[in-house]
Image 1 (cartoon, rainbow, N blue to C red):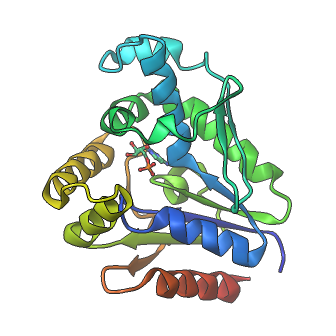
Image 2: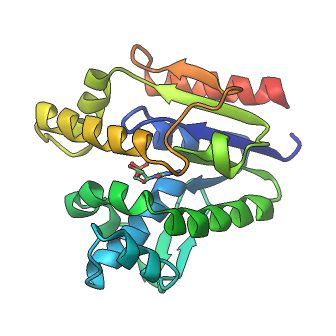
Image 3: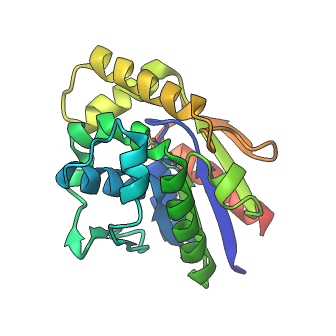
Length: 220
Ligand code: C5P
């Protein structure tokens, strides 16, 4: 297969990460989790005493951490200033603050440039997952997929991942984060006009993976 760039966007809990990793592994492509990058910068801000509710403070500090993403779908990694941040970026503290940090235009400009340079360097092609990949980061992607699912299905999946977390509280947190991500001024969570929408509510993960693999093969 020729080098192909696949953008997979959608709200939290739609199976974006699991699908994107599996599709990349099956097709021999690189993989980039852009949410992990926003989480990493948020974790650095919290760890370094930056008030994440102060957009000016976040903007001023945005260029300081060095974030490096590993793009092997079987072993995606993320480091901040050389430190493995894979665990810390998944904490509740980071999850509840990441939308405030990712809404700051200076943060988005830096991370978007990083994402584009990683995509350019992926010789065999890459699957990039996020919220604004098809609309802003890689508008010329060969294939754009927008995953959706009902809020109930998304909360049930996410609380399963969080090992027994309360489904109702998880749903409220997800809906709040999606509302913040969809309503921010700079590159909000949105479906690109030319993206293929896949509603995963009634599908198993394997069915979603199969569906996206077929879409990539059809576009190659
Ligand atoms: O995908 P994940 O849930 O890890 O993303 C965490 C957060 O990162 C999102 O809620 C959003 O605020 C931000 N994000 C973003 N743009 C992307 C990917 C993630 O703003 N392309």
